[in-house]
Length: 192
Ligand SMILES: [Ca+2]
Ligand SMILES: [Ca+2]
Image (cartoon, rainbow, N blue to C red; front, side):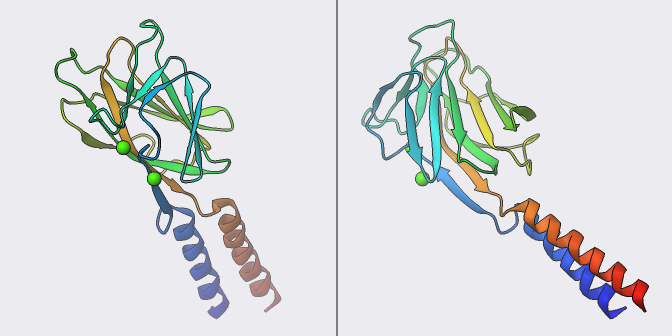
């Protein structure tokens, strides 16, 4: 029974470590970059993440009294997309978004998480007129290797900032350790 208790403790510990508990989160705030227009294919690097601009131009507002990224609307029929990758696994926690009140209605921003090119979950947010933090819903606690935030078409200035992403502390390794502990207990009980 002692071995079983130890084994179960290890499993519980492993499952705790595999979740967002204890994970390191970073806030991608775009503040290190000069303001201006960024074209599709251009990348930013912050906190171990590569952020790639896709679809249409975006406007980074630093120096214009705005510290987030917005739709630049170079091509009003194409939706700009920001892709976040860190070469490993992570989770999307939250971001700040708004639609400046003098530019029409707030249109939706779509946040999509991928793992191995397959869609894991999608969250859709409608910005208000002032910056507010929106937290992951369908994507909450989901492990992904790519995050894409699609800004609305024909809606400058809709802005986003402070994308919070959390690194996952090697869930596969921890799960294997947990399975190993169970195997060890079963083996030892059979030997008794
Ligand atoms: Ca940062
Ligand atoms: Ca910022």
